[in-house]
Image (cartoon, rainbow, N blue to C red; front, side, top):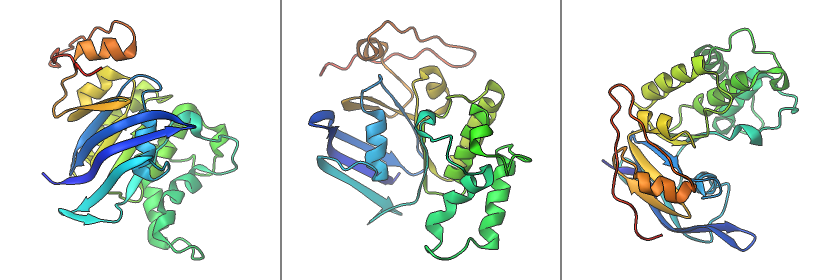
Length: 253
């Protein structure tokens, strides 16, 4: 399978402090990559580097289409909930429609087709009737759904979700992962989460991030690694047909 994102020797940080060091990682066509790791380990920094929102200190990030290197690919992004300015005067409809802003020129209006895309996405997110509501008046789960609609409406080649479970109610969480499974039939997904059990149940591959990256081509995560890098004992339980999986400990930390 061809990679669509290839990262080599990536180092990144803030104010002289290294957050990521010599990271190598590939994201493949129709991959569903789960990124886990402790707080402050570099998960969000890695995502920001991929999105071009943070410039790495060294290393390369390359993008591919059909096996050929390209300058960029289309990416939809759901940021962390706490990074959103909920006082900003914008409606649900405007939030979802803004996900199409890169597909129009600066001084042109949105087309009828783009407005229809936004309306269809609002229905898909279960937000009918809330189109004109200000984001500040939404519940946490409703706002997350609006932001997810914004990330998906442009039909991107990669969807990147940073802690999408935050403030989503359990009823919509099941729908969310059903929707992501459907989306994954056509495009790659990168999911960042501290909810290890949910990640393992839904993704295809795992990257454990704590300054460096340990990549697992299957949903197998070392219990020893989790305990060492999360700073506390973690018990992985199997439920139903979901097996208890353990790998050898990483020895380079």
